[in-house]
Image (cartoon, rainbow, N blue to C red; front, side, top):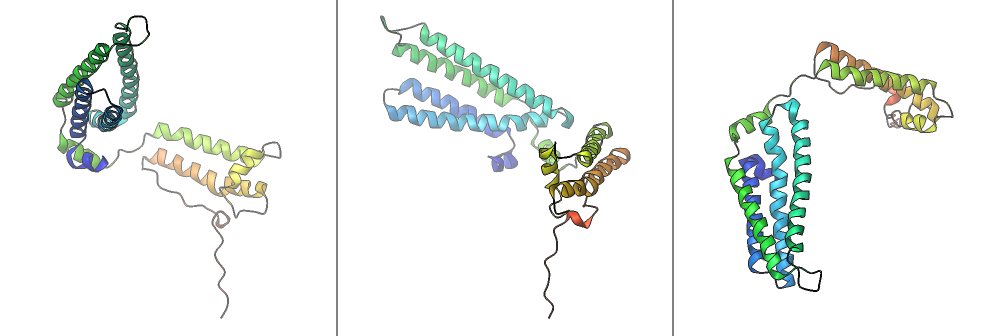
Length: 243
């Protein structure tokens, strides 16, 4: 899937997925009397929906600015949920409108109608996938473009939060075992007890990281990994026996 998107872009998998889904409902419209036919159609439909739904977020992200990708994906997830609910309601209404007399079971004609309507909707999806605008060159250029510099205002919040956490760890006592244990994992060689390791982590990991993020926010440079400022936060070297 990812290889296909990198080579041809997300539009091709989207078109292929909608075509496969349409073929699936056409198959179900003609053949739906044996168990293996349902199993085959279910697998085929899963393949089609997997291709289409997997390619759609990538296609959306190429059509919006980087800072709006989260909004685009949220809208996509919302519309996908709403569309699934509407589709289920339509199929249920079609089946419930034509029941076998004296039973709660739909007639074979009701299933034929439901498959035909679903196939028609998939045909519309194929048309929409074909006409959606897409520039593969822009997609490739976007994939290799350097990411934009971080927003200084957004970096101030984690810097302040890290500083507050470090101060809280320094004041932690036996009443905060979870906090002490979590902080101690950041400096496993920083002391003989969890409390000592937690304070070492606050001094050598949390505060330097907060200072690093704050410096990045003030200078506008992209953040890089900050090395621990104290040797106690690093693993002890393996002793080498004397010759």
